[in-house]
Length: 198
Image 1: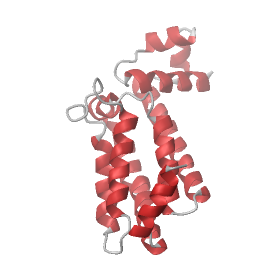
Image 2: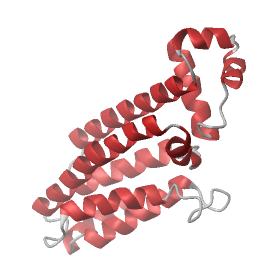
Image 3: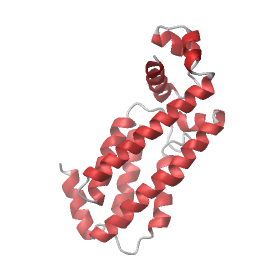
Image 4: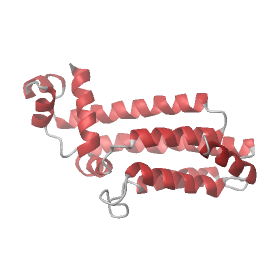
């Protein structure tokens, strides 16, 4: 039952945001009583925390898998783009705003994930890409990894990319492609075109 509650809470949160979901709405969607939810989660904060922890664990597992199965740094980026298109297809950009404003303790978990795991992943991709000759030698991985993270988060900013006008998956892909073209060597550019034509 706890797994069902968590899965439904994640599904609703992705489309409506964390703030908009009520325990009543969740119970109705599951066809159970609110009391049943409270047997597993003491309050909405604990539920949101579990949802975010589950998403972070899933993201980390998917990223590790991508790193293992990719042929090179650029292939890793293209697999990531494919995952982003799938994962962000129905994701409401308001989720990060909701976390930061209404669930600060859980937002701290996200920040830790972003500043440690995601940073290290991007940093390593940049280092590998330079070693493989696909990324320019003069780029600074420690700077660009941070830049890449912040540019990803910019896609969620409703003042810059309002959801009524822009699709989150489209924005994140455009930003990632722009980043990739900016760091690629001529050899890397050829590989990018090869992967794009697949």
